[in-house]
Image (cartoon, rainbow, N blue to C red; front, side, top):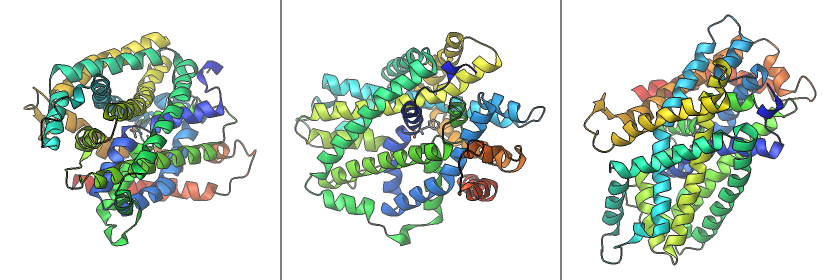
Length: 453
Ligand code: PHE
């Protein structure tokens, strides 16, 4: 692999990996999971899951990618030639592609909301109605369940992805992450400050940060584990692919700790932003599930602040940035595969991967509009993809990865990767391998079984 296919700087490498991890999972899914699963209790279990399981599995992916020096399939083939382990990589690529189909659509909504905030349309008519939540609910219907609007914005997001990814790893992904991630952190910080100065901030913070240990139930643990895996971008070949772009002297353990703490930091900041806002504006009883929280509840909060349009634009810009740095990483999994396996040029690989999404993502989007009567096992196509990928395919890929790395990979491989061939000592090595061998596969199997019950 040529040097152009490695990340150039340490900062860039971390920015790109954090960029992949910090996405709609942390800014959109996390607060609603906290709300639904006992507040601070969920937060604690989530943090424990990230450190205990997330970091070891992340290290398994990084090691596999850096030692295999190829895409998700190629890395398995290089390390286990003639064996069938590459099928695990193939499943990861398939899963990542399925996720991409609907993630592009949600990214399209964020873009649409940003645009509607800039133009002010999102807030037109607000003074005339008393039931603000009905107003924003119906606006959300109009933006999301409409046929053409979401399609246009999904296409714009696909176009943005093509434009970035054509530039490759260093000039596309790394350069963009270097610019976008600091902007994202600054916007988040700005919102934290505003939220903490709201009148009833304390009440919201209490819910988010003061744990009630009796609220920790098996279901909370399983959902926190699912959230940890999703928010760290595990089980989809993304970190194998990015690992293959890590230079030999990258310290994997340090990197995984930096990435994970950044993800937790963003999630905590999101909580600090949302819960004080929700209590201060008396919206606790609004239905705070996934889409509504961000797309219908928050605009009500913004509407009550001075300069509503400005806050709203900044917030949806933040969401769009977070979403795009994640979509490019998911798309990179398939692009790297096409380049390595079929020896395609970068350009051909980008187009072959992304152009079909114009059709696939459209079907996903329409499945919330005029195709909503068409269902698979009772789910719309959109929900079916979301459910099967997050609850079934991602965990299966992670189990295959842990079983391979823990039990079947060349003996010294993980130790060599974690210590950069013995250049420095790693005291945590034994613990990490123990988790990868025993704890991770058992607990992840738990998630699958529980989610199917
Ligand atoms: N981690 C991303 C998020 O939180 C989602 C993602 C999953 C991205 C897997 C890449 C791979 O939104």
